[in-house]
Image: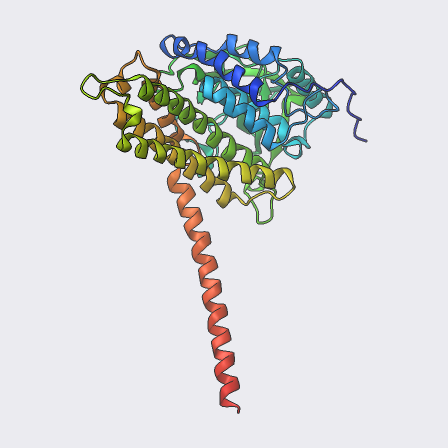
Length: 414
């Protein structure tokens, strides 16, 4: 019989527009230093914890905020506008607690432990899936990382790359296969202070530098038996028609929101620059030029499109109407392309100042380009959407052909 949730006092942080604007400003003050001296954004997470935002998506019965898509994405957008690496790390904990069905197979006491930790401002969890040989498992294949059964639990051996949040997380959720025949596949929780874990500090990327997405090496690392939280036959992980896409939607909308937040930070910096810059041969600010106004209008249009797409999908999901995977991933694809283009327009309008490291637009551009690398990537998204659209078109064509045939038959019988 399932245990009942342990009652806890729910935390309801201030999510007003004013509070979120203050949050963005506070995090923005840290962003340049994190970019120049990459490290886990501990100070940023201290700010989030002090405002009760770590456990925002944890169920209210477990002490969290019980937030759905709309409120959680508003917070992620505000965090990303200030310091996007922090937002990407935070997103993993939000998504983890926001899809309780995903965790239904877990040991209930273990899940409640993680939920209570998040509600208390700790409990950051990161999912480690990508490997040097396999790449991302989104494209198929079994991981090389293997869990071996022991007398006390499991021992995990393997390497994970692009491990977001590596040096500051409270929990690792490691995607691995068992050494059984046939193998099972799933998630193993590992405490970062477990034996025989090495973090190789190799993350030195163009942008999102404070995500500290280093290589994590497990060398027969022990973890308790109950930390094997969801093991299934590999084929059971394949998506099926009619499956709830809530977890996939969290990924799509969160990534879209984070890089939209970067573009909005770039837009705000650009507006200040264009209003303040008064060339001597013009005698007025650049913001007075029709050409500049037109290009800035393009930015506004791109960001409005993002807001409408993301908010509409979030409200639908909160109302119980979760968009299918093809739609969700297209939203991510469109929003990320719009965000990149919005920042590119800023570079076109500013010239050399826009790519100077003394101005934040340069950092925003490097950060927003990282939107392209998140799975599923553009080719996968567009092929899936194209297949679905063509299949619908074929069905409509067959239906129209049958209708025409029936009409001709009726005419012949008169």
